[in-house]
Image (cartoon, rainbow, N blue to C red; front, side, top):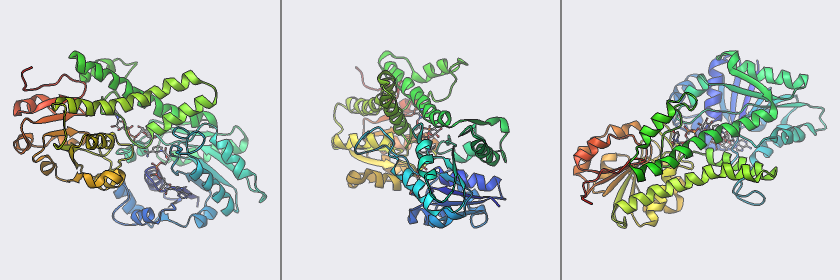
Length: 457
Ligand code: NAD
Ligand code: UGA
């Protein structure tokens, strides 16, 4: 039996290993983490993350060929293949602070693997890492006096939260990068063989290590760049009477451009886009490519502008003051179908409104617990309300910040009646029927579209 281990039971480790365990019943798959709390949650009925389709797989395989444990050392020694899926956040101190990836968890893992290994292993980079990290990993692992050799393989993850299971089951492609040595090629094959259990071989792309590492950063940079590009245009739409949803449709129907990732928004969030682009920026700077670094940094700057501008439009529309006014924020997750609030643009909007002394109420179907934690120092100034109808009562305005489909299906007539007049609705995700809302009596401000108000000049 092949023993697979994944170090890091987070948003990537949990779902990816669940799908591998599902399709490879002949493998034992163990997911370990230093967080006892997280592992206890993976072992319970209340999984630590919300992801459609995840709990069904976990509940059916847990205790069979899928285990969750805090016994990191034990399972390292028993494994043949180790996926490393620990967090790689932006460094907050010292050299490269604010941009470079903080690789301390990564390096600690490498040393722990070395310490607990008595047989050779394939170590797989699942976390997103700066290009050439595998070199450092190899140096740490292979500078041992135990006579052990470790192959390091890059297998970046492309799943998106909210669709993690679907993405894992049917990915556009899987990348496996490794050394061009016989041992490196064998290691690549071993990893490709895992995925070949459920996906066509032609979708498994093998390549050199550095290309694989850099492809992950590049893919995220390109995706984020498209969002910043359409958001930049959304601002121009608001000032000119153009409608960004129409522009995006027109542009996206060009086959060469394609329709995906052209949804204008209050800005992209999530734990990765910003950190990965800043990591790319830092790498370019380190290699003396200042112009290239500036080019990519602008994607992040545009995103910061987008969030600030959304709040500014709200304040301006509401007679230049929101102080003391109840404002209902619909959605605090960084996108729909997840409970994750990391780098959520809604959090920035919430904080900015609190600075304007607004009375903020947040509603979200799954992310309120995470929101409480992430808002930390200002959480006690915010009302957390699971029911959107209650959240909107006596509010001056509603802002749609996450594209949860259920927000589009609410009875806005009833909501309107419970609010303070004149009512405002700011659709930061363009999911609402704005004409209908206007007819109900709302003053409607949809992102990247001309406002529809009942005010006469
Ligand atoms: P996460 O924070 O949810 O999970 C990481 C886990 O690693 C944590 O539970 C942490 O306790 C654990 N950990 C840290 N050091 C450890 C150690 N020494 N031993 C055992 N466990 C340890 O992070 P995530 O969102 O799963 O992301 C992990 C990596 O995957 C990052 O590099 C990220 O960029 C990348 N990635 C994330 C996504 C995503 O959708 N979240 C998608 C693709 C790639
Ligand atoms: C993203 C990538 O899509 C994944 O391929 C990648 O594996 C992952 O990052 C990662 O490396 O962590 P994720 O952040 O989970 O996945 O979610 P996305 O669907 O990419 O959305 C990111 C943000 O962009 C969200 O805030 C979303 O609302 C926003 N977005 C997305 C837009 O504003 N407009 C769009 O058209 C698409």
